Amino acid sequence: MSLFYIKRKGKPRQLQFSICKTSRVSALLPGYLGPGLSSIGGGGIMTPMSILPYAHSYVQGIRAYKPGKPISETARELHMKPEDIVKLASNENPLGASPLAVRAMQQAAREINLYPDGSSYELRTKIAERFGVELDQTVVGSGGSELIELVCHTCLGPGTELVAARYSFAMYPLMCKLFGAAFVEVENKPDWTHDLQAMLRAITPRTRVVFVTNPTNPVGSMVQQQELDEFMAGVPEHVIVVFDEAYIHFADPQPDTLRYVREGKNAVVMRTFSKAYGLAGVRIGFAVTTTEIAGLLHKVRSPFNVSSLAQAAALAALDDEQHVQKSVQLVRAERKRYEETFRAWGVPFVPSQGNFVLVNVGDGERIFHECLKRGVILRPMSGYGLHEYIRITIGSAEQNDRCLQALGEALKA
Ligand SMILES: Cc1ncc(COP(=O)(O)O)c(C=O)c1O
Image (cartoon, rainbow, N blue to C red):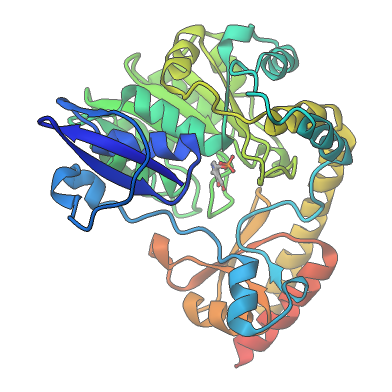
């Protein structure tokens, strides 16, 4: 637990967080600290007096990100053994991490008393080599989530705008609230892909960042090279374009967005180790961008934003191409099986390039609860206004058997 005192007009007040992760605290502080306010230390017990009047009103308006329902919580509620529960709600890798990454973490654990390399030098060097860029064009973050936050921290504030597709990652509107910026949501095309020309038209002098989520979550649709080229040709120079490629490994073909970085455009290619590499639990992702943008992102990240375990795991994972290929092949084969089953059942779905499928089950919340009763956790999509839909992560063949069994029963219930 971390406790922070916030000083306002000479009087210290306390803010109590139940999570002690530095990156999370730094995520919360921008919403609390402002001109004339400063953090002055730690320790103590929370006072009963409400702190809310002193927090930014836009922070109070935030609806916290709702992740997939955890296995442990479901096991407690259903009085089931955790090992009997199948979770296909958070787009995790059913094969786990590469054994090389696990071994590297075990090794790194021996020196866990030491701070990590704050610059993630070795990992960034490897990423730079892999992508054919300079070291100072790379940034490593505590998951892609932190990199998204760093970009927003760098350029968003009151009076600025972020443009993204309506059906894209739920963190973007949340970041807008956190930094007091406006979220400009652009309707997807009827085929669920990003409407890049409409996104171009949505750019104004106030726009600071555009997110292109490719493939997009929670839909699984993708935009291809030519559309991306046409889009990039029209983006004005004051705008940063972030290509959020969390799911790119599962896609075929994979457009080359690094070319925009090479061309010196204000582009950020963002990847994560959470999906194809199976390292969601250690929290690590990276961005490749221009030297100028990378420099800014390094300024706003916290000094030791990526743990030594995460750095070691990612370094090893990059060497285990076989594990990535196995993960990708599993997803592609099982995704096909889901899609064929839904076609046979007459259940509408969105063809996906990710490790998940968006399915129209009529009433997403009802089906979510019916499947939950059967020990299968899926993701209802009401948060996106997609009340008829659930999103299913592609699991192992056995997990998918369990899911299809539960889903078949739920649809008839
Ligand atoms: C589109 C997209 N971008 C980024 C992320 C962030 O992933 P992480 O923070 O685990 O790297 C996710 C996670 O689900 C995602 O769906």
